[in-house]
Length: 325
Image (tube, rainbow, N blue to C red; front, side, top):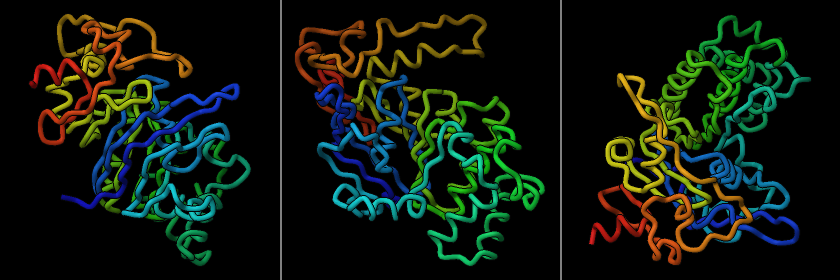
């Protein structure tokens, strides 16, 4: 078994709204290993991005971690000071954001932004940082890297900016790479290139990747394991083959049915009924029960516990547990 890079256990986080705290992450647990890509999937608002911001210690001022553990290479992060957490960001864990134009500083050249992290976190000289930056621009498939080093973000396309973000993060060779929907703003051909690139760099540097997405096509392309979130709760986790061939939770099944099968002569898209709950909405029992076609009285009153239905494949659902028994 590969070494665990990231271990999240029983993580609970809240947002304060109008002097009241509301849970946004409810007892989340998962692990990311070296050379592994774990995809976190769910609708907008399910807690995917909040999970990444919690790990990176970038929660907004009204957010806080209530309980739980976050370990990076065995080191507990939740007990570190803000200064110690800042020192880890960019050095041992890096993040690629959804929109590279807002992640890159529009007032600084690409070269300045690429070399700054290398000099700060790796202690490189100006020349060493420049040479390494050029090397990684070549690795991510950018032609004429010396010319690109002199340019500003507004002079580059979205695809090039995203490649530069990947080069910037991977050049410092982090143990953990978090990619928060990095292909959403890109067209399909560029999206494919970025996914192939991330897979290659992951193996070159032995990095563990936590990939956030709502696109099951991307999941099929890149994931080793999948974590399904709904309304702040983990409802299912398993290897990519298990999740796609044998989904167990009604929400996971609903996500699969909502994706069109372009290879079939005829297909029927079946959207999940109901509306995704607001953060302030109180829901007893299973968070998914208002939208679940199989919900029982037990689902409405009792929170389901996580069970393992096969090695590495877990699900939190009363109906699945009853079927197993």
